[in-house]
Length: 390
Image (cartoon, rainbow, N blue to C red; front, side, top):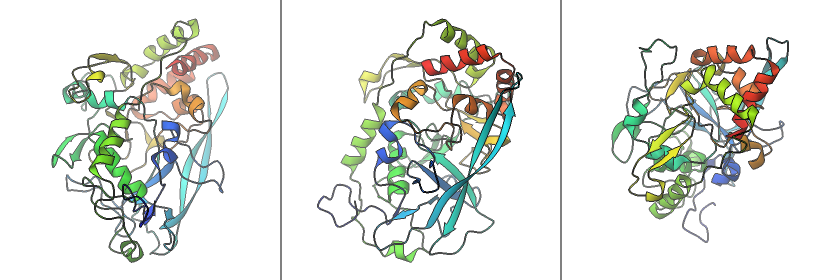
C-alpha cells in the first residue's frame, strides 16, 4: 500500500512498481502467465533491463542509467509509470517427423516510454515469468558441494552437457557465492531473492536491499512520499522467507501407470535427466529441522546450461551469458493447470504446452529435442504423461 497508511508494516509501495502483492505474480504460489490479450495486464511477468555486463562482482549487469534494472509499468497515484508495456508475438512452425505441425511463439516486449528519455540501442531486455514457489527450502538446503559435483563447464566427459555454476553477490555476507535461485541462478538464497522482489517488483526497501529502482534521473520517483527506512521490517522479511521455504511439493500421481513408466524410460533415454537430475539427498537443516534427511525429486541440477539461440535473451547475469539458463525444477509441473488455468512454461511463458516447451530446447539440449521430434505419437504421449505425473 502507498504511504502514509494505517499500517507501517509494509507501506511505501512504489513509487514505481509491477505489482502490489507476491500472489499477484506467483498466482496461488504457482507460475504466472503472459497477457492473454493487448488489454490484459502484465502482472505476473516483468522485463529486466541492462546496457551490458558489469565488471563489478557485486552487480549482475550495468543498469540502464534512466530506467534501472527492471521496467516498472505501474505507479502510485500522482506518478506516471516508467513506460507502457505490451507484447507482440513472433511465431514459427516446427514439424515432427510424422508431419505433425506445432506452432511456437516468442513474446516481444513493446515498450513506450511515458515521461523520461526514449530507450536507445544500448538496451538489453529479458522477459521473466514468475516461477512456481514449491519446494524451495529443500533446494536451499542442498550444499554447494552437492551442486558443484555435477558441474562440468569444460564438458570433460564429452557428453555435450556442461553445467556451469553461477557465482553471485551475497549481500549479507558481502562476498561472491554460489547462485541457485532465479531463471539464471542470480540469487544465492531465498531471503535475498525475496528482498530483491520487494524492491524491484513493489518498490519496498528492506535492510538487505535498501533502495528501490528509482534512478537519479527519475525525479518524480525520488521526490514521492515513502514509507520510511526500511519499508519492509526484518520481521516481515523473515516471515515471508519462512513461508517461501516451506511450501510443500505435491505428491506424484499415477506413477505406476504403464504410460508413465514408459515415459520415464523415454525421459532417461533421450538425455533429459542429464540436466533435469531427478534425485537429491537433503542432509541436516539446522534452522528448519523438519526439512532434514529427506530424499527429494526436483528434477534439476541447479546449474546453467546453454539452451541455444531460440531461447537466448542476449543478457548476462553474473557468470550466466545470454544463452544460458538454470535448469528449472520439474516437480509439480503436472498440476500447473490445476493451480492456474492461465499459465506459461519456460522463462518468459512462451510455451503453452509441455510439447512446445520441449521444442524450444536447443544448445546442450538439442539432441534431446531432436530425439523427441522423431518419437512416435505414442512415445511422445507417454513422455508427456510422465511429466504430468510429477
